[in-house]
Length: 111
Length: 113
Image 1 (cartoon, chains in turn brown, blue):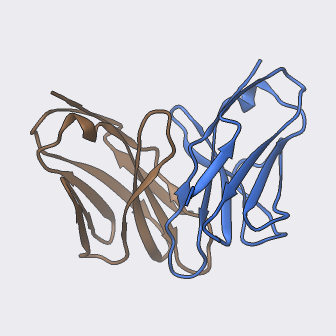
Image 2 (spheres, each protein chain N blue to C red; image 1 turned 30 degrees about the horizontal axis):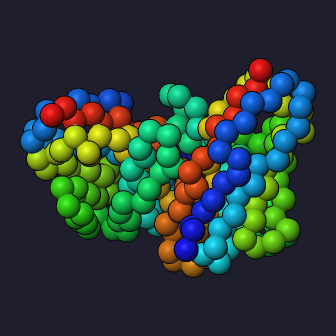
């Protein structure tokens, strides 16, 4: 059974204080790992897809990395507008249509 | 491009009432999904569809039915609502093939009294 565990559940940072969110996964053959951002009262918004170990992607202050067992979402010099819940999901290979989501990390960045 | 839209945005039901949630996408996506999101539980898949006229059960299908009569629409029905179905419902769609990115709607907040 595919599993995704995100840590920490909640994270409070001061503006400018860099940190990382973790997504550990167990999947029978990884087709892709996805990061989403979800603002309160809204649907998840796609950020990144990573396909193989060693891959990295960046967008503004966010950088996602992938190993064979986990992914990190690094947030450099965060701003209050980066406050959101960040969701991780994995898609297994072998014809599955269903991604497995983690429960998310709630990030609050204080000014 | 409106992307994925959901109707209604918010609804209050009494126990035993029925309703239908509508999801529409204008991206010509083959796959569509219905999730519910509850505090501390994350996103849980209710039903999904891999094409017009096809549907399949997800993780938590009991108490729900779905239909995909048109490629752009995916309907979620509650035949007899229960308080346990109070939740936020999200629809998502994605293209077939190697592109696995799901695009989510804004959600429907349902309260069952």
